[in-house]
Image (cartoon, rainbow, N blue to C red; front, top):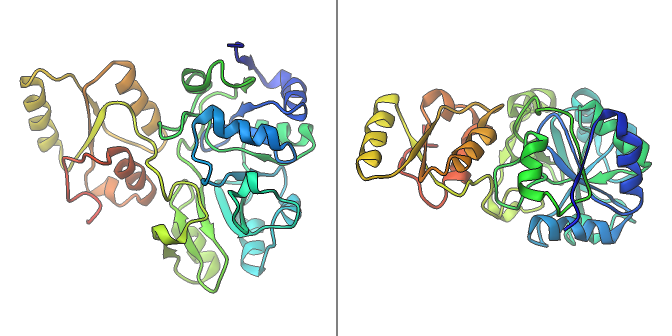
Length: 313
């Protein structure tokens, strides 16, 4: 096993060289750390799936350095151009018809491609230095909580990838919002760091919420964001304290989380680090009104959820 190099901002050129030579580099974005490979290196793209244990039919998101670069990857309609102009760089991903030359290793064989322009300066500097857009799913073992620090990346992928570019903790801490713009409806494929209401205000129409049949987006078909410990969602602080006492009386170790988007994944990982048997998460009315946060909590709690009413507020 070759040790994973830890690089900093002064080593952008070294990280870019690794990418150009067909290697894998975990890079910071404003959302979570992504595992980057140049989109014109098929072997490197396949290595992403191998390193993560990612299902082969789960498409990747292409990250570009600038909005002007999107046209080489995807076919943008008027709606897409408006969102790109006003919301990128930022935590928005658009699923659009793909251009010829964008390979199946990126799109999982679909006729569509997911594209975004990250806001993190190191990510964009790395993409520019590499001279090629990169495909970059979250830099973790597939299904685990996404990484929001370089240390999280190393905990999952140390020795499996060539390098991690350490940019400190991610500011948003939750993945980008994914919107499908393939037909007359604009579809929210994954709630994320950018509120859906912001997109709806710019488009002037409500976003249809996706079902499993919509496909075409990471996060729709597989369990995600889950620690090793079972996660339970409870509605109130009083219920949380009662459940904690009950579990501890049964001899179980418990880790309690009061979630926020910025710290959720770090909290879930901490529960595993402390070897908790159960992670109890407060999921009160305020949290249930945060669509992206609730989405991640419900996925993390599958298939076991103590609170069967969460999400129906």
